[in-house]
Image (cartoon, rainbow, N blue to C red; front, side):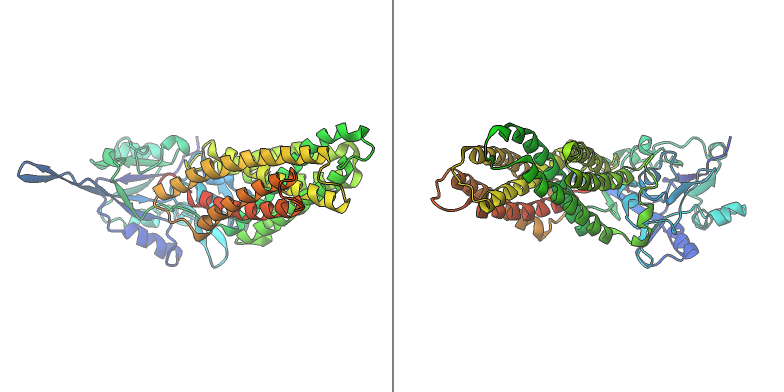
Length: 489
């Protein structure tokens, strides 16, 4: 059986001198801010009064953690470009020539192993010093440790030398079953207290993300899917209008507007997403890991939705329905991208509810604005009962979902971010104001549809509600990214 290279760490012996961290940076020429091995200090406890005296139960110890070359590497599973590979001896490596620089591996790794290399726009991480390993030498971090708190080698040999490792699943380390790390560990005496509320880990894992290009990408692409779904529902409903001599909204009229909007929004979203990549020239590799990566699958489904909309628009007939199942699949794929098992803030029911509600609200508002544009252009009267019923039905549905999105999901996202000590960006606070204004615009739209506002056209309020809602969703989506906090150190 091929041996699996494993790290061994004695937390009870580690002095926190950071010789291992310095040796790693020196061995691989890492610039300031990029560390493949990091020494974290775990502290906790406090003082308690006992009569006239004070007693403390303060504790402190250190953890030296790098990539643990896991049996179930979440970084390798998620990498869309197959830039992360695993050798026969278990060592997990990044091929920088194939890397997109998307950072998805860094989001998901509970050990903060992948680090962004800004000078060339790719990810990098601990390589187990494979050049030294193949030459029969120890990794630089192991060789530099003055108290021999670090070791590396065959797991059975490490057990023979040091005894069975344990406690790799106790906080602040993530549960071992998440990735099955190649790490044997002798715990510190106070390791079991690391989940106490006042425990601090320094340096702390990343909290919150500022991903402007992905904020825009997710909002636009979900709007695209929402337009496909709402237009499909209206297309089915519009079949009943065939008996009317002059139906105000034929299915063909709807498809001429909706399907190009689906394709255009998705194409624009995909172009914007390129701004997120550190190395855009490798973008053609983004679908190479369809077998494992939901990110690869999301990209494929985005292209399929764009293509399905264009095919339905160009050829018509039964092909106009292609965009509906494709939109459902796309939303499902995007949900799976963000529901990473190592990110508790996203790995919840909140993610699919959030994404679905955004699609319904924004897609519905855009279709509704298109409806009133058609009505205005064809000079239909506002009192037409079919137009009124159709628009009111859509508006009330959107208003209900909007209330759910803004007042339940939005409040939960803000609460999560604040609970994790993340400072919410200004755009999120502005988005909350825009959300309230979009609700007011929806109410005015209802009033204008039923004729309560005299001669004021619903067209103005339809587009105003859409624009305000898009601004509100951008702010809400930034709150979603700000709520990010993955497990681990």
